[in-house]
Amino acid sequence: MYSHRYRQPSLLNTLLLRFKATNPFTRLEFPMPTSRRYILIRTLAAGTGDITAGVAMASVALWLIETASLGLFLAFLVWLLAGIAALALSQTVIHPACKVLLSDQKLDLAVTALSGLADRVSRLVTTTLQPT
Image 1 (cartoon, rainbow, N blue to C red):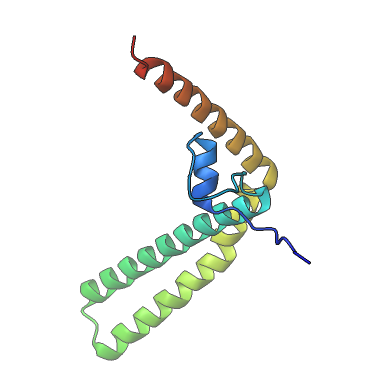
Image 2 (cartoon, rainbow, N blue to C red; image 1 turned 180 degrees about the horizontal axis):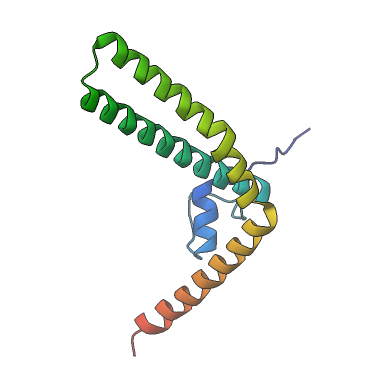
């Protein structure tokens, strides 16, 4: 008995399908499910926000250490406090903001707008680049 397993499409196949390019190495060409796409978008946004908060806290700690010319132990404490502050900022501000600002409805509207824009650009490119 042959069992056919359902296989999720890769991000590359989804992008190739969206831009109407064909991939000869795959037989499954269908768009990525919306839940997986939204998880990817929210994860990238939260990761970017976490990195930004970390870099901001690190620059504040570096400025404080250089300005106050702190000793080794106090410099360590400043770095430790900056790391804890970055984690707290991430958990209390960045992740809830991503949850509110990147809701399913808002992401649906953004994906619809960008797919419409991609369709218009692809039509413009195909009509402009066709030999006359």
